[in-house]
Image (cartoon, rainbow, N blue to C red; front, side):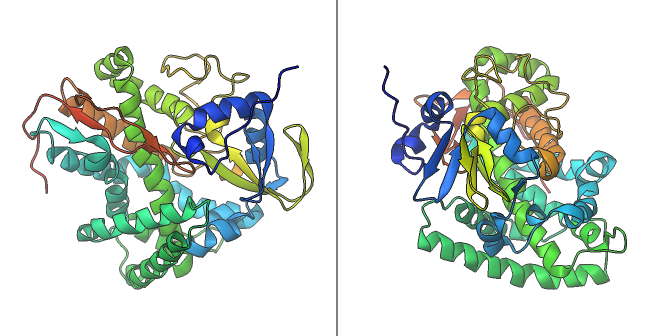
Length: 411
């Protein structure tokens, strides 16, 4: 009889260095784990994580303590009619014609400006020179806020993400997150009130004016959504773009194919969301006892759903530990909708409202990077490593390329 392999602790340095090896053990031997320090059940298999995202028994009540202290009450915590109305208030700005006509130029401009900052050098760090700034700059501009505040929003975003990923409950990280909550509210509430009096064509004005069935968003509602947008909209796109470039650089044939046909960028994005997702775990809280992973999870428990493991479940994906933008078990036409086969945008009623915004940012960003940086390759001696447990991506990505002149004058 073969002894069960020991799973590295999710809070250990060993796990942080290589969660994928731990995921393989969990998927095969330990699909349900009780983690005492986190006071949470951990599930890893695709079927179990998908159930936790889709089935009504699994609530988002855990966000009451996980997110509300730093964001305020957000759409993620709501259910039923309240959730439906709130989603109807914000969703139109993040899809279809509204997104393309109003915000695509904002995305294109911000990407080009950042690339102009390093394209003549012949070297760059895709993480620190580009990906870390791009989505936050886009969000600030979409909201119609002062572009001089990019650095301040960058600091707030970093603080919020650290708070959300503070699995070990570091008191300094928690205190900094709460300080950011207060600073963001002090900054945003007066702007929201002024914007209500003088509506423009920006996202903040859209949120101020939105009304469904006689209901609109309060100043606090909008502030909380802005805080959520900074975290969810910034972190995912930041790490996704860096990971796409890293994955393509490590697979030169696929990089060549994407460079020659930008229509393959959505495939590279979808496969990156599966293979190296920006968010590795999301929590849920069942309202009743549920059978999960071969055991019983009591009502009111916290369930940590390992997206990073589920997306590599061999029962769902062939050769799951291989990056392959041409795989036939990950349809691209549904990859950015609630019918997605990967789980990186969640599923069901809480499917990511910003999925199409992320897709637009990635298509523009990756396309502009590949066009502007000929012969792109890893810098000599560079060996990029991923960092993070709750969210994860390359810590840095040094590259070199043939210098090119600026294609435009930055504003």
